[in-house]
Length: 324
Image (tube, helix red, strand yellow):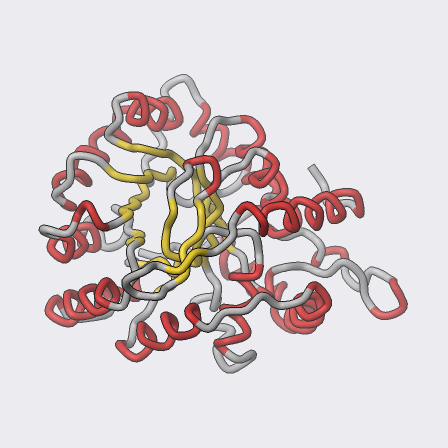
C-alpha cells in the first residue's frame, strides 16, 4: 500500500463523513465533550487519561491523586497496558477505579505475540485491574511486517484476541501502532478489529504538497493520518489518537492548545493524553471543553509547517519507541 492523491481525497471525504458521525455531546455532569467510538456505539469522553510512563512518573500516592482528579473533572476513559511498568500501571488503575467501574471505559493493551502468552498476560491484567471484563483490549504496539506475520501465525495472538471477545471478557478489540502506517493499514484492512489507536499529531501528518504544488520530500508523505486512518474510517472502526504532543517533543514548538485542537479536529473518538503534571490534567480538560474544530486550511498550514521541521525525526523516534 502506498500513499497517492486518491488516498488523500478518500481520506478527506471520509473525514468529513466521520465528523458528522462523531458529533459531540456534552457530558451532563462534567461538561466534557463525548464522542461515539465508531461501530462500538459506545460514547466516550474525548480526552482519555493515558496511564503509561507519564502516570508511572508520579509517586504511588500522587498517581492516585492524579487519576482521582481526572475522573472528578469528567474523564471517563482510562488507557492502560501491561507493558506500562510490567503491570504497575494496571495495578494503579485498579486501585483508582475501585467502586467506580460502571461509570468508566477501561482499555488495556497486551504485548505478547503468541496465543498462550497473550492469554496468560490477559488473565493477569483482569486481576491487576480488578475487573471481570475490559471495555477494550488492544494488541499493543504493532511494528513492521514481520510483527504482523507473528500476530497472524497459527499460534499467534490474533486468535487469542478474537477469543476474549467471543468470551465477552473484552467487549471490543483493537490494535495500536506508532511505528509503521502501512503495516497498520494492512492489518486493519485484513482483520476484524472494532477499534484502533494510532499516532496522530500535526507534525506527523505528512504533507500533501509543497510550495508551488510540488511535493517537497517523499518521505514526509506517509503518515498514519493519510495511510491508516482512511482504512479505519472505511470500516467504521473507533479511532483513538495518541502521541498528540509527541511525548512532549512538540511542546514549545507549537501551542499545546493548537496541538490538541488539531488532533481533536480529526475524525477520532478520543485523544489519549499522558499527563505527568497535575496542572496538565486541568488544562487539557478545559481545552477540550472549549474545543472548536480547525478549518481544513488551518490544519494543513499547521501540519505542513511542523512536518517540514519535525516529521522525519519523530518518525525515527517512534519507530523504536516503547512507552514502558
